[in-house]
Image (cartoon, rainbow, N blue to C red):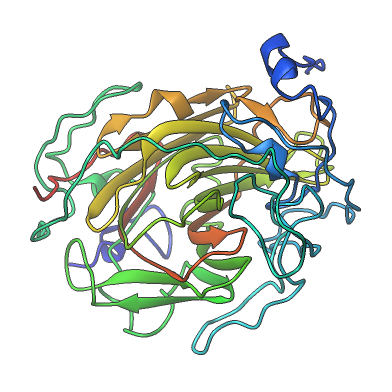
Length: 409
């Protein structure tokens, strides 16, 4: 049975902060840049060459200030980027517009501004090679190795050991019985983007339903980015049945199969929650993704303010197998949480402030939106890299933690 058809019948058609300054240790690390380096605002803007290096990296020189377009209300559109070289500490890389690959469905115009990432190998055709201080460091070994076997036939699955805050959910129960929204994509047409309530948003990528990999049932959503610099392949939900129900506190879960993570210090995102600031003057993005040879990462960004903040994990995103990914975004506590295969990654559990920021318009703080209004899933990368493919299945969104089904060994 389609998960979308198993929605709750009540759902509808579907189922301040003072400037904290710089921490002494951080200022010591980034003394060569100054603590108030500017960054571009947007859905991925700034000088990530200095902003999103690991905490052990030597930070590069200050970024060239970028011109910000006026902030607009969150309407589902992804802002248009400036162009430049991500590794040079200048403006974000990538062309201002990219032609989507054949078969892609595009909405909402061009790509968002992209970050400037550190790393010794991140050179794009648009600019000079990175500076000598952009050292990435060797990543740790992924906590779980190997490839997956046969997938379970039911989303609810069996119970699995679960860790982290907010308690261990009962994974023997059907998560769709109480969730705001579930989707296994089995009712969608192959080769097409997933249907309502999803909309696709691509730039140099594709979003289509595929039977090549599926965790349960027959289908999953295949997202792909072509080789090159900035690319985006999102499918998004705005409004019912997810919002406003999950606007103040959102729990989500998806199953993902990832072919490979990008090499070097390429930054990428696979979960993005969006909403307006308390005063409505700028938009806020809570993100999970990764960087530095696949290390998972929390990222805070704004459109209309210069921020672009990071918090890195020591855990590497698993590849070539199905992985259970859970997240929680909370407005009351300015909080982000992330679980991998049922275990919370506490080093990217962020409350109020992470490891550092490229821009200091908010004093290093990570304020949550007044309400979350949009959820985007898929893959967005911000620097030059090889092509990438991922599959997403069994998406559940609600107001309490979902948990993971039994995972293949």
